[in-house]
Image (cartoon, rainbow, N blue to C red; front, side, top):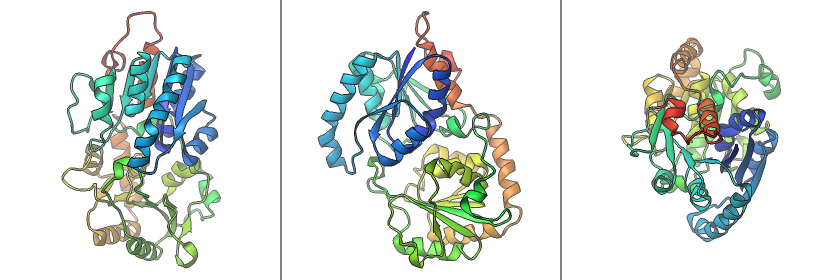
Length: 358
């Protein structure tokens, strides 16, 4: 069986890395298509995944529009040569590859606010989303229990590195928090915002009174010379180990909040996505007591400090996490089961019959 997988962001690398490795271990031929992006390629190389790039990562919708023809040409040429049996991806590029090569394409996505499912739906064989997804995408739509990040943070596939505190240079009992700051330069971020520069500086100042602070600044805008915080400067592949041992995550971004929830790390999320039209997975995680979605910056400051000051926080969050993951699907296994079904000599099966998803 030949499987083509699109990895366009670092999050996609994590989502598919275990599936790629397991499929290769089972003797299947896997190829990863990626956009040329420093952080994405760093992770692909770190995990020794077989990848090729088809074009650069665009920083604006205008540049993307100019680059789409080149991207599609490169994809079509390479897909025809590789001749896959099945294609996985999040949206338009995977769908286009499937259409151009007449190959079944499976979209795996979790954001109702993105246009990925709108563009992809007419051209894909199936769309997989978490059960909390708040839109009905029709007869091709199948749901799994949990969140997309289960593909790499399910207890069956992830075990934190106990040496991470040494790598970070913090003591065994030294509390530390991670602050994740979004660059808001993705196409799905148009019109959205998070913490202002002034709010970022105030947040770091006040949190530093309770814990050592590490900052993951996607946009690279902060000057740490006069800030009571350290940049997170370990290899990005170490972030989940660091997140698992952290006492708190505060973020104006999305993915790392879900990751913290699966690791039992208290997480506070605040950006302009939060509100009545928020995504279903963040609503579900908040209802499970694993994250807090806050619109007010003052509430972020207040609740962050409360969580760091409460000695019971760690035990409470770990218990809630254990309850949540107990019935969560392992997305890596679902992906592998679907992929291998397309290599069978029997008639092709749907995602539902292969995986048992609803």
